[in-house]
Image 1 (cartoon, helix red, strand yellow):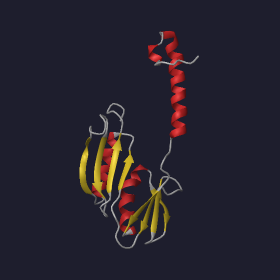
Image 2: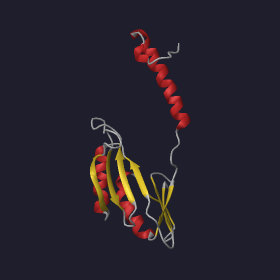
Image 3: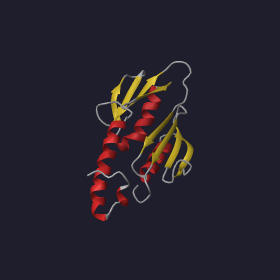
Image 4: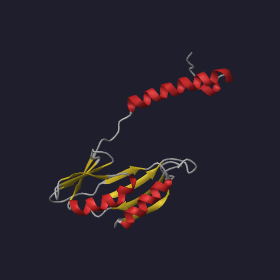
Length: 160
C-alpha cells in the first residue's frame, strides 16, 4: 500500500505503514543523492608547521599521519587513507575555508580549544549561528596559514 499524502494524515492503523513507506522512499532518495567529499588537498607554504598543527588538533578525534613526503606533502586521515592532504605550494597561497562536521556540540568546543592550544587564532567562539538554522552550532579559527577552519554541529543540544 502506498500513501500519496503525508502519512500522519492517514488513519492511525495506516500511519505505521505510511511511515515505513515514507522512510523507505526517503532512504532511497538519500542514497541516490548522497555525494561525500573523498579528500581535499590544502595548499600550504610550510608543510611541517601545518602537519604539526593539524595533528595536534585532529589526533584526539582519530586523525593521524598516514602519508609523509617530508617538506612536500603530508596526508592525515582516520584510516590508511589521507582525507586531508597538506601540499606545499610555491608562490602565493590563498587561504581556504574548511568546515569539519562534528557529531556533538561538545566536540565543537573540544576542537576549538585544541586548535587554540595548537596556535590557531580565534575567528569566532563556539555558539549558535541561527542565521543558518536554529541548531547550527559552530566555532571558527584561523590555522597558521590563515585558512579559516569551522567546526560545526547541526544537532539540537539535546541530541548533541
